[in-house]
Image (spheres, one colour):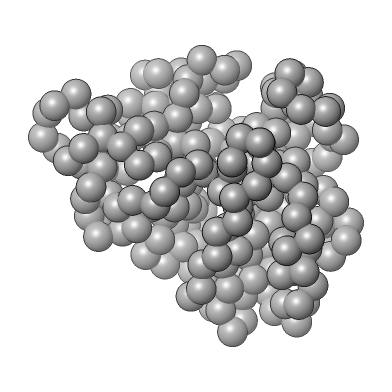
Length: 208
């Protein structure tokens, strides 16, 4: 599995291009880049999908354009699908030009498991940053959106955010995932579950 990170937009959001001989996946295309479009076009003979971790503008902004250009379907956790149509919920009215509304082609529930080509993907619902935030466990890599960062976690002061849910989501990840799993967040550098168990401030100094 090859993972390429593209940092895009003023907020420096991480978009990931994940590929194998049979798969081509784009995760969180928040802003348009010809590199992302070219990736999907160059892999048109593979099984392709656009995965969205949550419905904020900096993670969804280019999804519709990429679908229109390449025919690649869009998928998101079911509880955040409404955000794709609502510029107040997705915050594009406040931080960015209002986005054209759309709906995802595939909606996920917690614990859904499926394949894109030869890649196994498991959906973990992790509310806190938004109601319908999800993380995608692709083989042994976790794409955590704005739930889990390097020595940090997502803010909860936007509409739909909830600190108590964020705490629960953090502890779910820390107690159910193998420590060696690499974490690819929506912003900043990658980390591991093991590192976050030791150094994430969500622990408040207590050992898991």
